[in-house]
Amino acid sequence: MEQRIAEERIRRLFELAERRFPENTELSNRYIELARKIGMSQNVPLPSELRRRMCSSCNSYLKPGKNCKVRIDSKKQEVNYICANCGEVNRYGY
Ligand SMILES: [Zn+2]
Image (tube, rainbow, N blue to C red; front, side, top):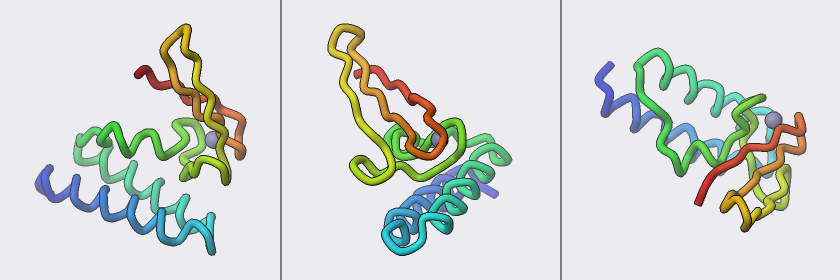
């Protein structure tokens, strides 16, 4: 698979996850897992804006206000996404 195509697939899977999330969280988590697998097998890093929408520990699709809390640590210049599923704190600099 070409890398460009792999990235397109990954983006499409994240879109599907977003669309399905309200009705079927399980399914959207599976889309994320699949997207991650494609990325790994094709050696395509997940685009950073997509990486923020998932939990790095349990692969859940994260939706702020639904299944994750967002905290801003202005001292460290970090945004923390706290996964409600496994409690992982996903940290991103800004
Ligand atoms: Zn998690």
